[in-house]
Amino acid sequence: MVLAQRSSIMVWLFSAILGMAMLVSCSGESPRIKTVEPRGAAQAGSAAIEFAPPSLETIPGSQLGEQIRLGYQIVVNTQEYARPYVGNRLNCTNCHLDGGLNPNAASFVGLASVYPEYRTRNARVNTLADRVNECFERSLNGRALPPDSSKLRAIVAYITWLSEGVPQGATLPWRGFQRIDSRRPPDPANGKKMFASKCAFCHGSDGLGTMGAPPVWGPQSYNIAAGMARVSVAAAFIKSNMPRSWGWSLSDDDAYDVAA
Image (cartoon, rainbow, N blue to C red; front, side, top):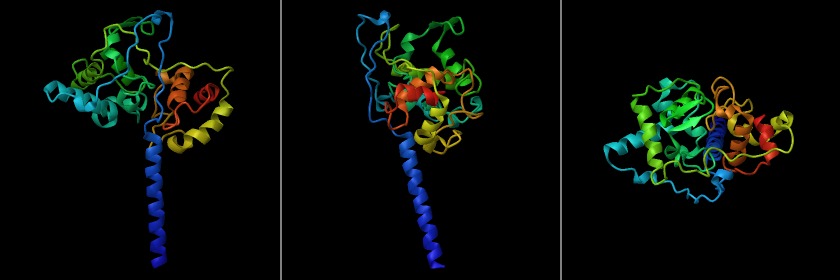
């Protein structure tokens, strides 16, 4: 009886330790931040813009500060703070890593300075609020927040606060994901092997997510209209950020294979 109890305790402790290790591995910050150089001819000769996001501790203690804090909470805990508008198990921060503060993962820093902006995808001028709602409809597979929603205003306030000091219309070297090029067509068979060895520990062998990482496909992940549904976008994200604590460890070809 005593031996059985000890055995049960040891199994529980092992499971707890494994779970903690998994959470750290799957959600920890990457030890390497790669400098993203300006890309494209339009950026040639332009003054460099430093990636210098403000500390969350400097959010003002005013009514505006409360709105900014709410925006941050919605971004990192979307399931809790905006659940009625979300149709899957994702949070904004699953793509915009570290609450939009990671320069390698579609950072929010400076983003308010580029909107309003004409986008060819929907052939119209988009506001920052429009862009946020596109993410809710596509990446979160949900529905748009009402234009007068306090939640939408809070997200916009958070991104605007992160953009203070960035000139309007500035070119952001870290915007989006750093594109990569594969030297050959993607190989899904190799991608399956790479997923099993590099990704399954966090995302599950079936890719449907675990307690430490989100689903990467299926009904609880982003829909086909999301940017991450494009192989080139997913490959760029994977290359820069995955495995979560070891970004830049895969080759461009392997990143494309996993995305495929």
